[in-house]
Image 1 (cartoon, rainbow, N blue to C red):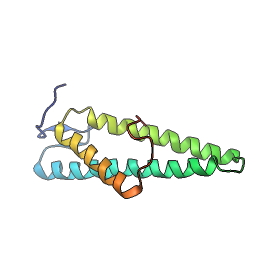
Image 2: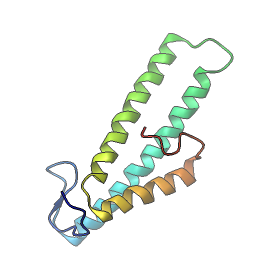
Image 3: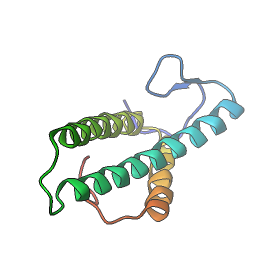
Amino acid sequence: MLFTWDWHNSCVVFKWWHVRSPLSFIFSLIAIVLVSMGYEWLKTIGKDNTAAINGPLRPVPSNKWKHSVLYGIQVGYSFMLMLVFMTYNGWYMLAVIFGAIIGHQTWGGEGRGMACH
């Protein structure tokens, strides 16, 4: 794989997500931005859930399970974004970064920063 700016006839993560036209390219960029924003939102939900679990009361086991499931979803989500980045397509990389910027600005931002997930 080589870094490229060529979007035509590119595949994004899945075989069915094949970019063949300018319109599908624009929709793909929008989708990647939204997915990246969604990851920032999910991190905020996880942070709020962690604060509730680490509160003054002892956590209920079911809440710990919910937190663990949410964390697992967050890890899977981050790996999917990593796969988008690993297409080595500059446009898709910028879309991930732009979505992260918008999501971070929208939903808060104190968190782990550059941590992987």
